[in-house]
Image (cartoon, rainbow over all chains, first blue to last red; front, side, top):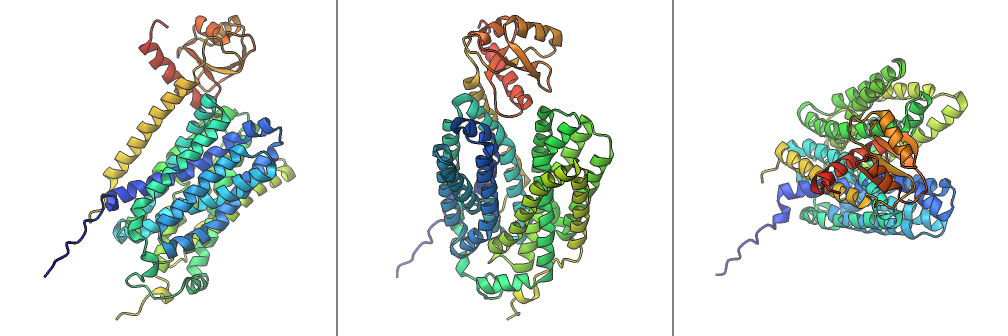
Length: 412
Length: 125
């Protein structure tokens, strides 16, 4: 009789390694995209292009990022997160190289807009969190979503100065190529996620055996999912409006561009803490009420910021508070998707929620400018943001924080 | 399987920040300008130096003050005469750096750290 010893589990399937690898992916993915804005001026000047060309490529990138997220999620659910993350990293790097080498606006927009946009979606923290959702036990899941979101926030905080220093030290062209190369380690960081690569073919315990198409149709027929989508739209609106329009709003009130940069840095720093704590809170106290509270607090913070006479102190307090509430919605939203529909199709179903976020983000940027032009002031947009925050706080209240009835398998 | 917790989070984030500071230090050294450099640059003075003293140093070095940062001892200056960086250092600046395409205040923090470390390592220079 021969006995076969079970092969030892590779060290990189260790839980700690999986969490660290996922966080590094989230950090690089989110950090890189936040540094592209620094290249607007040097690339436009080098080619004697109007800034509109680069801006359009970045707008396209955001759109593609949103639209490709559910598709990348579907691939991750079907074939496992690792392969999708690796393919995403390659696209991200290739698109960034194309930005550096583009000689025409069309090539710039295809590379920086389409290819990078799809690459960001496929190597994003949404894919990482979906993998965490499958691999991490339920009692640790919310914490894992929190740490991945906090890592993304940290990436945003550290990559912008890094890209700036690279441009300063080497020039924009080598800087862009170096940054393209920094996305490639995502391929190595994705290896630990091979541990769950067959998950797409298995039905997790307690979940029913349905196709992805059926899951999507059933999710869109679930009222709580629709409410969650509506709420996340507001998150996108708030974030993009504040990110893009806060500096000119401050400038209108005599606060310098330098200070605006510092204030946005404070958002990034407090965002790390807020995202992490939100994951912990979601694990201990549920997700629905904290989510509702976050939107309510955003409305209160924005209203106070507009009503209190503007100063550098009030700006710093506002950006610290809004930073704490910035991406703290993500672990809770992801957590609700997991509770409602289980882990099998969570990347796809979170992807659709994220599309709504990106539509909100688009409108936040566009309406911010449009309404400013119409009224000559940002005040109407700030009050719209307050109203939307209250709307989001209310729409989360009726959400049922429980498995969607048709997604639960009947007891055997 | 035992899943990690807050300790891992703390170690991860502290390690990332430490690595980031190390990389930024290397890049700031690279961004430090040689004495013959000219053009727009970030100039770091000793913290606590009076604004009129800084202004006088910049003008004496043949540079044009563009704007101060949130820290009054870090200035963005311009000029086109060769040797501007060296003259600024001779006038008391701790160091001159290529202008970073981000908030000069944040860039200035790193520049100050670099200038201080650089002065400690090679005090005679």
